[in-house]
Length: 293
Image (cartoon, rainbow, N blue to C red):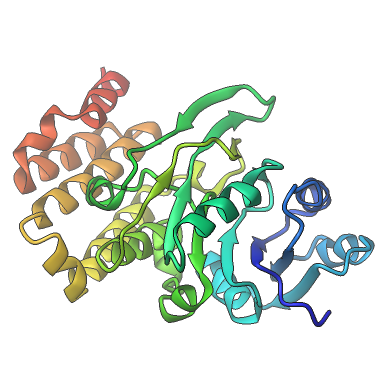
């Protein structure tokens, strides 16, 4: 395939053979046809490769790597991609048929834009819409208060993705995306398109639904340390360090409570208020106390 595509859709996958064919078939329905599908098999042992190889589409690029977690898989996908822009898709989620056309139209109106985000829905496994992620036109400062985004809906100019890879530290897995988005938000304008163009499936097997409280505490501590070491972040969001830490702690509190650890929830709400006391009056804290009491 000599033609250079405009978009590269990068799909990291690990033991998702049950989903991968459906994911590819749905991508083939994109109204904007100039794209490639880069599948990075992150050490699967469930026959993912054989399923992908049976699908006849010259736009599919498959590569297998030793399991290195999602950051490493996405970085590998970027390294072998050829599109002008890259976007990321988990193997159990979906881009609606107008997703790439929506992105292309926005890029055409905003030449050489480095990064942007498109709105999406969260659905359950039966297709019921649980929430819509529609944000303000610019999301830069929202990222100080946690991660309102997901990898789905993010589009990056390829050179920006190459120069700003995901962290590949295993301990960070699950927060590597927020760390990168905040770093990029300190360097570039980060616009949002409020057109629902994709959906994320919330099911019990999603890694975000599996909470090991001790591992989560270490992960969030590492995430905070990494962004605080970034000079662009500390300069762009000067004076917001306490806010960043407070919302990281509230993330631990919420997931601790959901995992059944009332003690963790209360301890991290307290830690959050020590960093930034107004965080006590946020929706996150209301949700935490609702789960606690």
